[in-house]
Image (cartoon, rainbow, N blue to C red; front, side, top):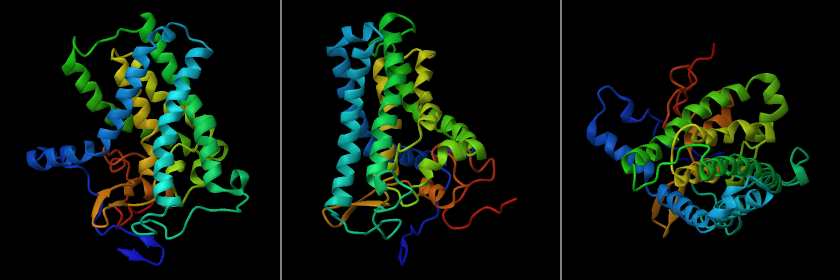
Length: 309
């Protein structure tokens, strides 16, 4: 539904059917399919290319030094710039679908002193690349170094394919729980004032808003990668985790509920659930695919907000 302020989806946000007891089989399979496809195809491709890149240059992983850090940083920057920059070019520079399906019917802020360079996009790019990509790289480099040097057990796909498939499938859900916990911490007033308010400058979000955060928040956020310093996995799972949390937010923050293809075909795009958090601030702290918000009465379904205490 279009209105004067932007697009509002007609359907309310519902808890995924996989969490019902007992879960309806057909609906659950359909939900899982829509969750993983088609966007996960892109994330898997990026992770697989990262994996090949690492395997070809595996000797670099043996030393935790500037060479390793630079190597991983360039890889992460490439995919972040390709994905976030590609979405930005398509929707915000080329303006391929104008304001159709945009949550806010206006473009990113310019000439606003609350942003670096007085420009929302440049501000977001700065924090995403300089801080976000760097801290993401630090965590990922450390875990890959541990794996390469025997500091943590590594299971290869030809050894434990079912176990690694389970790690791959569960990773976003475990990360969703982690995100809810650290997000509530970031909303503690003193931490919010010092760090998290930087991300919340972006009410009218865009693809570069995804990981536009204060360095303190980046440390909280990307700490999920450390999971694989304790849980045996393959390097592919590590880089996929980085792609999911480093590149994926460009999609969830893109600002458009749907992506229009060929003028008639549309794909679900930016996350309405998380958009409502940027709109209301004190609701929807987590992710709908790991729905903890209903437990703590902070769930907003897009239609009726929960009563505040």
